[in-house]
Structure formats: structure tokens, C-alpha cells
Length: 309
Image 1 (cartoon, one colour):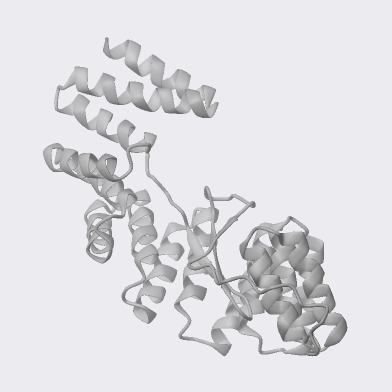
Image 2 (cartoon, helix red, strand yellow):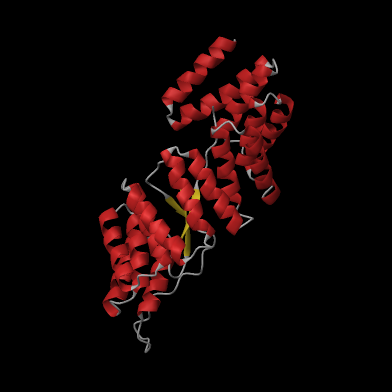
């Protein structure tokens, strides 16, 4: 079944900024950074300035550089900050996160370890190191770090959410649902937790419960295209194809480039005996896969189209 399993999003908060890590697909170990806002970058220190630059100044400048995509430059500023203040745990945490972004996992681990040696109650570093342990395949260590984070801050919804992401990648949907439920209890407006819980429930064929979660997502954000797509497909699997088409039409209206929404609508149109419409939708999806170089998916859709013609 074609579930649009986005975008398992979790927040990793640095000392002076927030980065939202988005996995392109479950199991991806190359997250990209999206920023909720872009502060005005700091000016380079003036050579004529009488004010000495501080470690805090360097960290703030490093965050601005990282937000602008200059990760190597950010690391150099973190290096200088640590030279000025070797006991600044936040500088190690932030540098570790930036090293994680460029794929230097060994360097990131060393920085996270040093941050926790300096501050054994640094909740954010436990979260960051936990995710790194997960990426390295050490699930026991990952959950140990998240357990420590929850012990220090039991009301942080994002920690439960991130544990849910790991269970999703492990295919343990019951445990995943339990973590998202905890996240929602801590933050009743946690849109992504509702969405991913809906996906996990759909994986367990709990379609009515999944639809309820997707409906809550849409209440919180009526422009969330993936929620319409997933809710539409769940309705299709329950045999409510006319209602499914309404949702899938809305998903495509909101995101006309979403190939999976066209595929799901194509399957639904087949059930409604709209063969021409189904072929048209499958062809749009096939063209999208071809343009993206997804040859296997493209060829599979061509075979479906040929069978329908």
C-alpha cells in the first residue's frame, strides 16, 4: 500500500537556535536542515572594534553561518569559542550537531560526550547523542540516552516523538503508537505526532483510528497535503471510495507534484470503474518517477497502465 510516511520530523535544539531535522524517508541517515526562522546574520567582527569577541559571540555567529548553509565556517567558529571557553558545554553540543550534519559522526560523538562530561544534565545533548547512536545502529545506547533525557525532563513531547521515530524505523508500530500518544499527552497540538501515529495505526490496519488522527492533523493545519492523502487512502481501504476521492483531490490541489497522491487516487478510481481517470493519474505519477530517475517505480506503473488499457 502506498502510505505517504512523511517526514518523521523531530526538533534538535541547539544552545542558541532550533533546527528541525527531516528524514526524507524512514531509515534515512542524511537529514536535511530546515529552519523555522532565519535571524539576521551577525556582522563579521570589525578589526577596529574595541570590544573583545566572546565565546557567546562566536557561537551566535556560528549558528548564523549554519543557518545560511556554511557548516564548515560554523565549525571554525565553534572551534574558536571552545578555545576561549573550554568548559562551555553548549559549544560542544552545537559543534557536535553541526558535525553530525556534515556526516562526521565520530567527531559529533566526541563532542556530545564532552558536553555531557561538562554538564551531566544537558537534556538536549542526550537527545542529540541518542539520535546519533540510532544512526550508528546502536539502538540500546539510543534508548538509554532518551531514557536519561526523559528522566531529566519528563514533559518534553519531542523526546517521546523522537523515540517514536526510532520505533517506526524498527517496524515496531505498537511501541511507536505508544510513544506518539505520550507526546500528544504532553503537547495536545503536536501535529506531526498525530500524523505519524495515524500512519502507524494504518500499518496495523486500524484504519478508523488512523482516519481520526489524520482528521485531527487537518483540524490543526488544513493545508497539510499528506494528511489528506493518507486519510483518503485509508478511506479507500475501508471501501469508502467516493469520500476517498474528495480527500485525494484536496491532497493533489495542495501539492500537485505528489506522485503518491496520484497513485492512490488512481487505485481509488479503478474501484470506481473510472479506468480512463485511473490511467491518467498513473501516467502523471509515472512521468514524475521517470523525471526523478526512479526507473523501477516508473516501469511498474507502466505495467499497471498497460494492464488497464
